[in-house]
Amino acid sequence: MLARIDLRGSALPGTRELASLLPRAGTDIDAVLATVRPLCEDVRLRGAQAVREITARLDGVDAEDFAVPQAALDEALAACDPVLRAALEESISRVRTVHGDQRRNDSTTDVVRGGTVTERWVPVRRVGLYVPGGLAPLLSSVVMNVVPAQIAGVESIAVATPPQRDNGGLPDPGVLAACALLGVTEVYAVGGAQAIAAFGYGAGSCEPVDMVTGPGNVYVTAAKRLLRGLIGIDSEAGPTEVAVLADDTADPGHVAADLVSQAEHDPLAGAVLVTTSEELADAVTALLPGQVADTKHSDRITTALTGSQSGVVLVGDLDDGLAVVDAYAAEHLEIQTRDARAVAMRVRNAGAVFVGPWSPVSLGDYVAGSNHVLPTGGCARHSSGLSVQTFLRGIHLVEYDEQALAEVAGHVDALAGAEDLPAHAAAVRARTRS
Image (cartoon, rainbow, N blue to C red; front, top):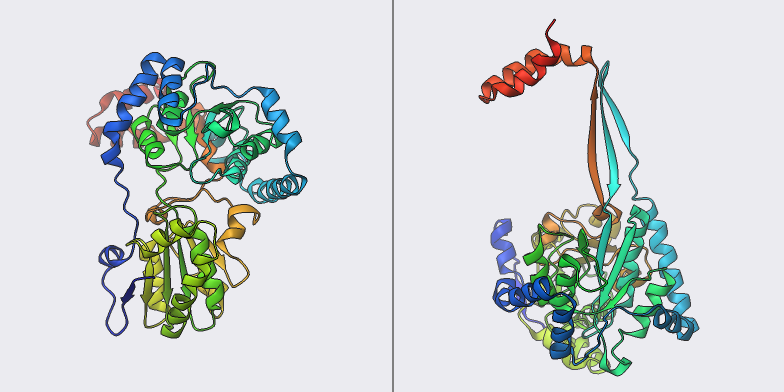
């Protein structure tokens, strides 16, 4: 089921070349921009009416107002299964605990006597949080987006999530229940590129936002790229992916189950096993057909596991394995080896690392306390997952008194002269002439 790449027996190529050899889902955002651009432009020009018409055409739901009424949020929470509600409450509690430690405090540095620089951490004023609802209604993504925004101190939070014909044009009840549980009252039944455009330009009762976060399909991602600059975004999320770095101590049943669980998300999902053990690779490969057959979404999973974005990579030792997973820079990386924590601490590139046999990715999706909105497509080489810091901006306050400015005036003269910007120096000299 999984294709194999054997990198044993010779020196590994450089990082860029190595990354190009590894399985990866291809997402051509540029290819859909031609489709997304006119949708976004229509929303910019015609607002709520454009959103209504696009939603009717693409989602089969024609609603005069795409704002979800408070009564629907209250009803969804009241009807929420007690077991599901308890799980949501536990997830919220753990995510709050972890993300509460991320909030930075303002700091003041005394540069010289009479001269200080204070760094303030100021939250974005208004954010739009996108929650997917296509192949799977990701109510857990409500928690992962809303909680860090709330902890950051964002004063205005709106959620957009696709409508469902089978739910009277309202979004998934579980998504609505999660919003209600978190105290989010501004929810819109709109998905896709038109949701991002409504956030960016404003439409109907939805006022423009300063930032949009949250995962979505290629059309959502293309709209985020198109509107970036007008709004801030967290990332351009591609198909989800997992890499497992394992040696001969790993349980093949665990590894196979984790590859299957990630492939369940999307036919484009990537699942990659990097291992020093050919015996483990053989055992995992033998177990996969049976595990896939036992799952609800076996067709989707089969497509993902047999696609070019998934496979097994055989390596000579763990050092080579680490080089491979760093080149791959997975959204989710599992370490199932001897001394797993020590190995995990050597990882440079990953969105999140799951250490040892009892820390599967599924735990992180829901109740580990970590965030599951993570960089994909190798972006973990330079970007982080969603956090409280996503919603904060650092602002420097510079405060010098007259003497402190006078002491540095000569340096300003020298630097301004070197850059041929004499007015810069003059602005200081105007204050420091005796």
